[in-house]
Amino acid sequence: MFTAIIQSTATVMHLRLLRNAAVSSNYFFNHSRPLRNMKPIRVSMSSLPPSDPFEICVKASVTTPNRIGDCPFCQRVLLTLEEKHLPYDLKLVDLANKPEWFLKINPQGKVPVIKFHEKWVADSDVITQTLEEKYPSPPLTTPPEKTKVGSKIFSTFIGFLKSKDPNDGTEQTLLRELTSFNDYLKENGPFVNGKEITATDLSIGPKLYHLEIALGHFKKWTVPDSLPFLKSYMKAIFSKESFIKTCTQPQDVIEGWRPKVKG
Ligand SMILES: N[C@@H](CCC(=O)N[C@@H](CS)C(=O)NCC(=O)O)C(=O)O
Image (tube, rainbow, N blue to C red; front, side, top):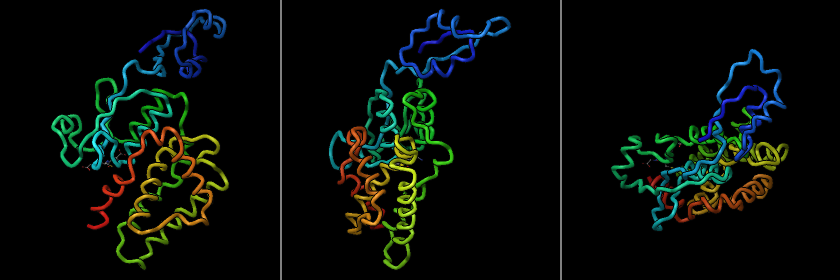
C-alpha cells in the first residue's frame, strides 16, 4: 500500500480514481491553491490493486470436486471482485462438514468470508461495501434511492418454492414482485441504474439464477413472456463473462434447494 502526504485538498478524489498513479510534486504545485496555512493531509492510495490476491472462502459444490457451490451471496462478492478486476484465491468450504480452520476464522460458520489486511470479514453487504470504498474504480455504487429495487424477489421466490398449496397465493406474490421489477426496468433499464451494471444488479443476478433453475426444476415454472424486460435483464447478466466465471452449476442449485423444498 502506498501512502502520500500532500498539501492540497482538491486532488483527493481524483487520485483515488487513478490506478498506479505516479505522484509528482509538480502536479500539486500546478493544481493547488496557495499552500500557506494549509495542514498536510495523509491520503491512502488504496485504489491500487493489491499485490497479493484476496483469500476468500465460498461454498464448495456438493456435486463436483473443486467447483464453486450454490451460494448467491458468495457469487455476489466474486462478481464484485471480477468487475473490479481484483485478484482472488478461492477457498472452497464444505458447509455440510465445516473444517476446524474455517470455524476458527468465522465461528458463525457462514460464507462468504474474505481476508482484508490479515482480518477475516464476513457478510456480502459488508464485503462489497468495503471493496467499493477501497477500490472505487470502476465504480459499482448504486444510488441509495435505487438499492431497494427488486429486494423482495428472493424472499417471495423462496415462499413460492417451498409452498405445498398451489392456491396459497405465493405464486401471485412472486409474480407481483417480478412484474413490478419488469416495469421498473422498462422505465429505467436495462440495469437498475440504467446503462451500466451496479452493485444492486450483482446482488439480484445470482438470486434470479437460483429462481430460474429451482422453479424450473421443482415447479416446472418459468418467467412468463409477459415480462420481457426482466427476461432480457436475466439474459444480459447471465451471459456476462464475470457471471459465467463465478457461477455454480444448475445441479448444485437443485441439490441446494432440495431439502428446503421437501422439508
Ligand atoms: N447475510 C449473509 C448470508 C450468508 C449465508 O447465508 N450464507 C450461507 C450459504 S448461501 C451459509 O453460509 N450458510 C451456513 C450453512 O449452510 O451452514 C451474507 O450476505 O453474506
